[in-house]
Image (cartoon, rainbow, N blue to C red; front, top):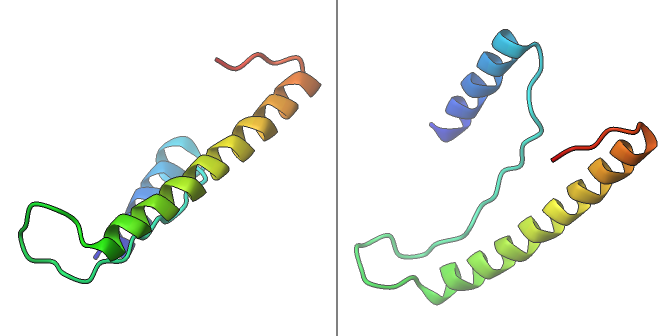
Length: 77
């Protein structure tokens, strides 16, 4: 279901704006999906790993955008 929704969202942005944004799929493993007060250790570790990867990705993108901006005298805020 989620995969189909993403396809629709990208098709909509392509139709409306003529392009689709870059996107990344972030998955966090889980082992117990019952209601509870805390996350499983597997999920907690997965979240920590995902956050590290997201931060790395954001830092990489920010540096690339800054490099592009400075090369083309464009200031992005």
